[in-house]
Image (cartoon, rainbow, N blue to C red):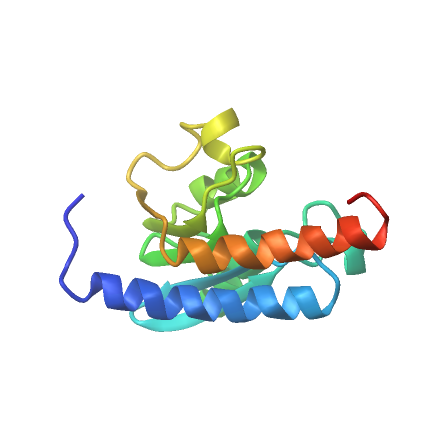
Amino acid sequence: MKQLANSHIDDTFYMREALKDAQMALERNEVPIGAVVVCNGKIIGRGYNFTEALQDVTAHAEMQAITAAANHLSAKYLAQCTLYVTLEPCAMCAAAIGWAQIARLVYGAADQKRGYKQFAPKVLHPKTEITAGVLENECKQILVNFFKEKRKKYGII
């Protein structure tokens, strides 16, 4: 995949923004995953996991960010947008990314257990470009620390 010279710098910047949302989730005792939608160099949607607070298994970071971006644009298709998310989307979120026709997906850490590549590798829109591994260590570490604390709290480790 061909990328512009500034693409890496932009990807790092926007992934750090998604990590800020992951931190907000962490502070609310939610699984710390964050997402931002960018269009024409501007963040138009943000989200973080909100499943515990809403008691809604579909309230993933990506879903929140996609909804916010669609509301911002007053449009259901986000064909000119890039979604940055700290963890590889699950199959549900990847399907929403596909339905929204998001042009580009950038994620930090791979999800070997629940990631879309494991269960639905063809669910994204065929034109969606994918970049993986942006700030991978930072994205992975916030999750590792969260679950380590959970296991510790419940005496699992």
